[in-house]
Length: 254
Image (tube, rainbow, N blue to C red; front, side, top):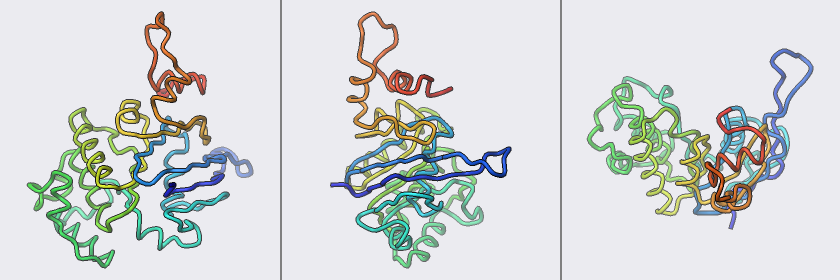
């Protein structure tokens, strides 16, 4: 049963060199995301992934269309939506003079919740860094801490925007393990990525997005079999890069 339903989302911005002309950053996006799944939005930079997430999170105005999360209308009841979602903050949005425990306690106060900071840090594999400050964490540790902060309100849905960008391979795998563990506990997770391995390894289903539109949706395996079958003579085949190329005419990393 869908926990997130998006119908015909649109978002327009002015063209950089024009006062009168606009372009669609998000152009008629519809999504149905089931409760308890990890759903990925895969696409290159500028595809509209982040803008789509921001509209769902209430961080960006919706120009057209509508959406519900757990039956709550995103536009009509934004504060109710914020009570049931977790949003990953970027590392530079924290108060650097507070420790991790102090920051989590502060976020708990903002949500009017009594929390157990140690339990959240243990989930994020950061219990040994409880008294550290964000500036003293590695890139991977900062990302895991940002997820711990997003869990303060015990969300039903967790939104992650490019969670492993800039991380080394081991840090990526540590974060994937955290995401998988949260999903195993029943949490619905929606993430954006341009990392094919991440989409294929983590996500139950993905939507491929390009130029503001969803061009395909399904399980990674289904999309590969449908759009990039494995001809024996092909030297490179059968991955999401091939799927993206077949659907859009250009490579994911272009």
